[in-house]
Length: 112
Image (cartoon, rainbow, N blue to C red; front, side):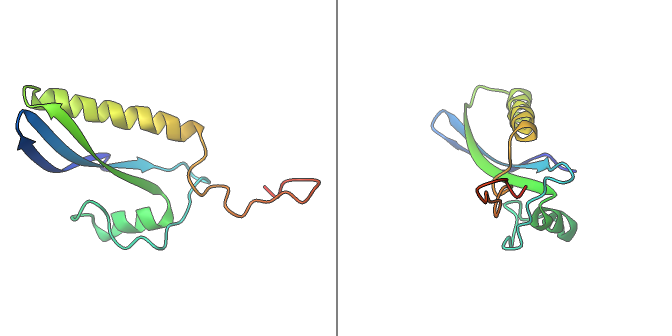
């Protein structure tokens, strides 16, 4: 599975702007289906990849990062991998957005 996908780069002045899509695998049992998703931020996503995002098996996040243009490709790629790794660790230990949707307390116990 792809994890970090660079979708655009541009240089403005001394700054390199890098747009990236980050895909995180969602642990079994923690999926939050997203049937409303029509497309991926990565335009070349396969139907299987899009289906995984819709099913909640993959969480997609896209962002733009800015670097001094003096940084090397290796440094930028290493940074993006560290962003992915740190975010994955956070996601693995915290509830995903929408994970508790519909959970309720009836005055005695929680439903889940």
